Length: 114
Length: 107
Image 1 (cartoon, rainbow over the protein chains, first blue to last red):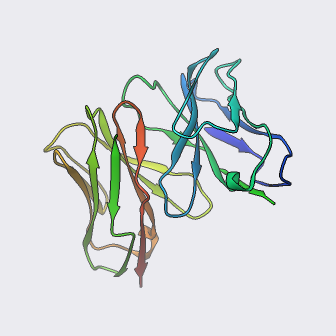
Image 2 (image 1 turned 120 degrees about the horizontal axis):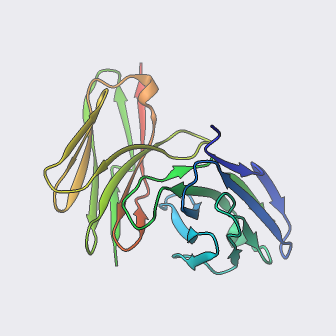
């Protein structure tokens, strides 16, 4: 049982490049989300999804796109990378976002934008 | 706006020296308060959920408590393997995380 799997673990981009961070879960969770973690700040919600075909914005959505075509996968796209997007990105899932269920996290993608 | 503040930012303890971590929050309609443990280079790992004031949960050397304004994570007789960053999160309209407390336990 792999849980939440994120790829890649590390990535370096130049300003203006685009890329997709991958996230997959095998727990049949309805709710999936993307967070970024910066030093001295709490995890901040970028986008989330309460089920296949449904996505919504979180606290810091600008510069990022998501889609949810299957229950298992929730990729995060950086459209045109900026140095301010240098961060550690975590994907998380839970049984249902409508109830207070604990989040299961992947091990993160460390992104550096130069 | 929902807010979560954790204190202290960092805590250094000797092995066996008990202490508490604080999580203060303001939220419109608390649906749950969560504690997570995060090791370096890893994602947060779920520890506890508390739903209402007065509730307590225990796991090994950790005990979490909840009031209407704050939660405490009590660590009794900590060991070096308890060293980690401990995150608090509150579920209101959405999930808000605190910045964490980095705990170091020296042998």
